[in-house]
Amino acid sequence: MSERIDTAGRRTVLVTGASSGIGEAVARELAAAGHHVVLAARREDRLAQVAADIARSGGSASSAALDVTDADAYRRVVEAVVAEHGRLDVLVANSGVMLLSPTASLLTHEWRRMVDVNVNGVLHGIAAALPHFLRQGSGHFVTTASIGAHEVVPTAAVYCATKHAVWALMEGVRQDLPPTVRVTTVSPGVVESELAGHITDPAASAGMVEYRRNAIAPSAIGRAVAYAVGEPGDVDVNEVVVRPAAQRP
Image (cartoon, rainbow, N blue to C red):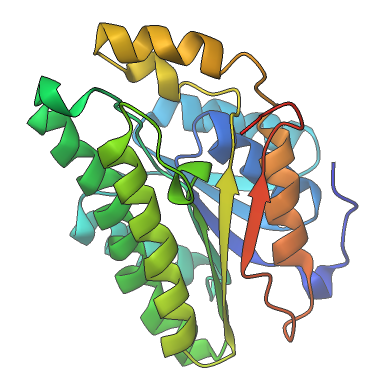
């Protein structure tokens, strides 16, 4: 895990989708680096378990129930973090779903779900955190896109569209905002997670078995985020692609 930092470099970080997978790994790495981490997701029991485990390991963590598709709830969580800690330094907008299917399957409810979580969830986070970042004169948006933001594969048309949207959105945000607000987009390749387990289309689910054969641990993404967050304020790590060495393409 990351080397601990002194109190002066300690940041308050909100991580969404932190109940498992990449979000949990990011929270653990940032806590190990000495930051206070607020874990947010819908599964409150799992959040409490992870936060308690971080605390037992000597880290600082708390949790908050959050559905990122609810803009008002997102704003309330951010305001509660600022009220308790005096500031929010980093938002890791990690929540995401990957409901792959052939376009002809017309699983339009799953298309809408991916847009709601993967795109609108990030927009809600920006809207909730940005006023605080601007008021305090600093802040850092970190988003989890995907290798799917850079390439499209069969059954992933809508998923890749949402992840490309996140990539484009954050590049636009970076250009719009003052340099005191940093922006990092992390694009993971195949990572061990629960994402593929939510696919309902049989053909897409079967195709994922071989595609995900060379998955890497989510801690690899956690280390990438910890690196970007730990850089000095005048260094903006805009984009990181992290994938298995064996992933070709």
